[in-house]
Length: 290
Image (cartoon, rainbow, N blue to C red; front, side, top):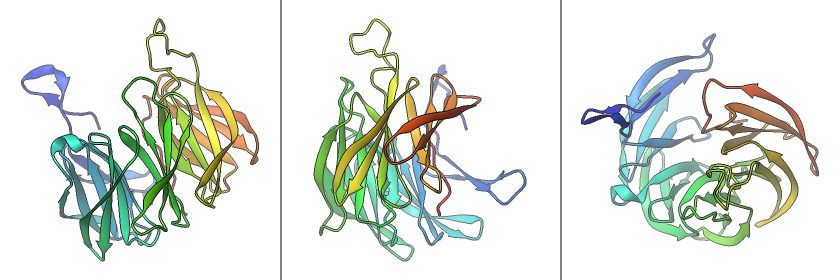
């Protein structure tokens, strides 16, 4: 939903705290509840058991915890990570549900949360990798995680690989992908990662870093090593990405074109497979857990 208007300045928006609950079994799917998380509620994840949801609250330095019973969510507290400027952006559970990672684009950390039943706590352990960690994905096997960096606004180009088997987890690899990686997604078999790269498409046309196309890049994952296997030109300011259930199709969102762009993927090549128009610029994209 749109951000609320600042009562002191009607031309400005202020961070919202609303979390919408959608019943996917309804025909058509319908919003059945609206709850309060924290200011700047951003990344949302549900554990594999379907019993907990976490929300990264970007404008107040917290993560909200909700318990789930059927289609009912109940607030179960907040975790204070740091001051409001720490900027929690996304949160993701490990497959076993015993921990979660939170990217913090305000102070350049990735926090490790511990989960015991419905009890979620900040373990006080964290990783530091690059400037402004943002999007995050954990493999279905629970062995690796990949996160992107928004960087300092100067065309930063890093993606980091986390070894989740290490105690505690740690960053073990950094790769360069192009100007400002935005979204990241993993295939359900954990064999591939897709990264959307803005490539300067969000710049003014007279800016020296401007390019008139972005990139969709596919990397194979072997252990904790990423290797680029395919790349395709895409639209402008493209953000979210997702694989199909059979991992043969990759879909991304492009903000400027206001569409979804689909690509067929055979393990080595990306081929355009059509577009779907959106009513606005899409910013986040997920597919149902499988």
